Length: 386
Ligand code: PLP
Image (cartoon, rainbow, N blue to C red):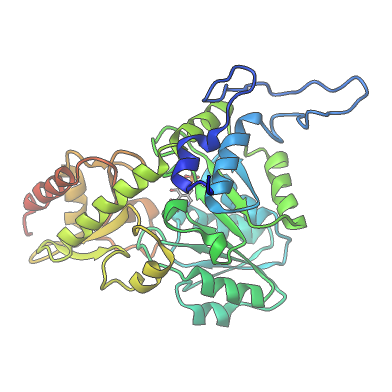
């Protein structure tokens, strides 16, 4: 049989069988500690749950296979995974990160990371020329990319950015939460690390927080990342790991359904009298479309944003009113679950955010797309000019 396709790998969790019971889904191991051999060795390779956990083996192996990497580490959240990448650097290291990115990580970089001695520079990451101008050969140790990036869905050319980072001696890490391995494989495009908030699409059911890092090749730096997980203890629980594996089994179905509906919704509202702008890389007129078409396969993701406006409307008030009056779309933060969510993003991100006040962020779930469109239409029809 030829090499299995990603859908087949994830549907069966790589086809692993529990050797003790012949179960096709794994047991949940909950032991925090492991027996030492009489001769003082740990031949099982397990010592203590904060360093490692058998519950990680299968979901880590599935993510490694989907990303085409060397190894994956699970973390207790996407933030625990992302911050480990920076915590493994040394004081004085220079890092580049995007101005448009997941707001909580941007805040952490601008606050804690700087106070630990990292020199963090936020730049226009979608422009290879801006990246080339900002890298400092020998001093820049990491370039962090998020694509498509929250919540404007700007697109960064991973291959071009990897070439610039590597020429300067820096690693490239990609937050691929929104693209998922279904749509983009950053390591094949030259990235060194891929990060996911597995809270989102990888799990897909809004019932846990988790994060993952997948590396292209082993290195002393990657061993420091492993040390950050073991020593700081941002480790995922056994039950959450089991749930994540369950979620990964349907990843391709969920992501493809969300992509198809997001594309339909984006096209439907692109010329709507009460929508000033649709932000979605799947729209041919959007700034990132050409790069997205080249580096995303099979769709442009399940995330889009609508800027509410039109004749006589105050965009910010109108956006908040739409969020208040949808019925099927749930007014909540997060993304990547089976249920569709929408959120007035400026209310979340606060001062200093690049998000316009009239923007609603939409996470498209797997409901019928016509129901989703009709719900937004009825909420928009309820808007009254000031
Ligand atoms: N990266 C992206 C793109 C996200 O959307 C999020 C969460 O919303 C994170 C990272 C952080 O992940 P977590 O909430 O699992 O810590």
